[in-house]
Image (cartoon, rainbow, N blue to C red; front, side):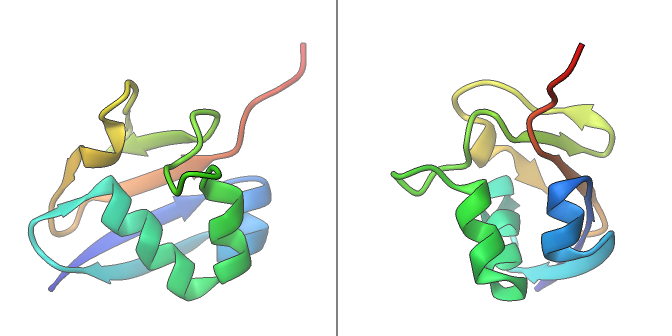
Length: 93
């Protein structure tokens, strides 16, 4: 097992807390981290996933302060000690 730090912002902070660590099996991907968050708050997981069980495109994900985008972003690798940040969609003007 390895430990990944998670930072949650705005609505996700309310659901999961500001900072937490989750344990995931190695090798791990963003999807594993998201599913581990479901162990913290199952209702919160519903706000992260779409109807097909994938991370919603509108959810902003960073790994070690680098934004992860594209179709395969759920499969982006994470390593022991990495920081994953999650943001809800940003709106406003």
